Length: 388
Image (tube, rainbow, N blue to C red):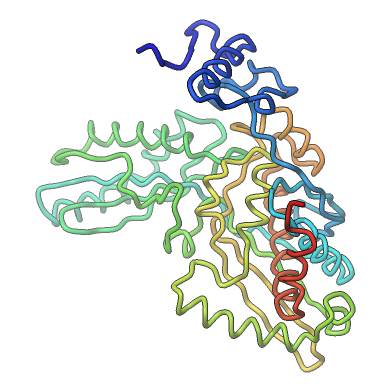
């Protein structure tokens, strides 16, 4: 093929090859890649993160904060890098962070941690599948030991089981340390499945994923049982403070939340909040997360109360926040800088990052709903959200 993209099997991650690919693309399409070709990172560092490296997509990064977090791992003030092309986004999160700061900060808790691979085993009939399920329960410790041979940081926590027809779906749940862990758990589960095939008779066949792990897509099972980190961010806001910062009473926010939850229910939404995907995506891009995981991570459950003194309790539960501080895109130079900015670079920092993102999402929820009620939503986009 004369129009094949240039490659070099022995040294594909070099500036020479990147330039050849940019020239090739220009020859094929007539498009200039002058900005795509301007970057400060060494192409060699992208091995394992990209194929056919050609250049970079430069996404603007804005800084929001200070964000005050009262977590078990993240404690104190943070300045949050947010990579986005949506005008008003950083300003809105910044306003929400001011509200949280004046209220004494967001309390954030990581309450669960699990990454899945979910194989399915096929038998001759349902009884055989049922009996296999009992064998899995009886031999869990052996399966756990087999999984452990493939990873030092991952650990098989438990196996959920689901029966349908002559099939047995197994949902392997792992903890994965500071890595997001999809590849880690895939390898471990494959080794376990192969061991099962050698030690349990009567299985017709198996598939490594029967789709109950719901990789890169939302599912109700994740909302109920967690994928990645289950993070809960909460705050108590005096009504006077809400009126001072957001220019509306706590009762208005509370009533609006009840109305919007009905709308979310009727729409069949995976999220009873306003826009958690905005804050999650912006921090994901800045810190080198797998952005496709926003499909799962953006699910959220909001809850609100108001007491007799008009103190407004508000929380958001993110049931499947998939984040890492080690491996994948987190090792690239720009992303390393952003992780360093948060004090979240390297091992032992993943729950800290999860708590910071949870608090960031909480700030964004409070700010956007307040803007909608106060009439600032459209005017702020007119002022800040259009290229001029």
